[in-house]
Length: 116
Image 1 (cartoon, rainbow, N blue to C red):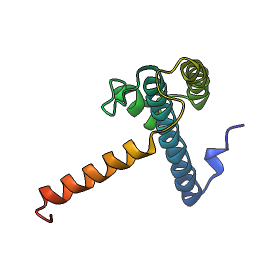
Image 2: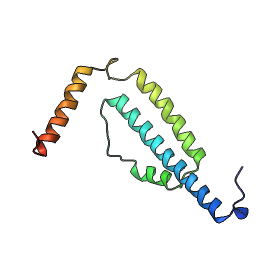
Image 3: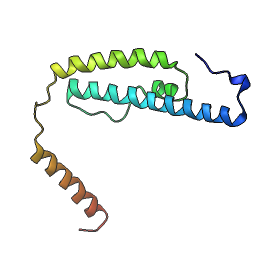
Image 4: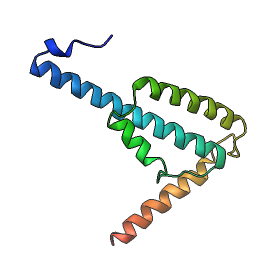
């Protein structure tokens, strides 16, 4: 049930607006992370730059109803379940390879700053 905005004080309206803003921001992050997760499971490639940035901004700005976000999230969760079952990614993480990558990134960053 929607709150009675007419009877709210200015402080209550500001608090309500801030609460909604946080909900829409979280909703946009949810959809972005679900989409990125599906793509990663399906391809093994992590795409940080988003082709769906305009849609995500619309969600963040409250242009989508939260019910619409829920429907989209449900579809993405189902897609993620299917993608996980067919993923080209290995079942286990190669921790040595991940550690080597992390060390290489830090070493390069330090070298770029002239600290190594």
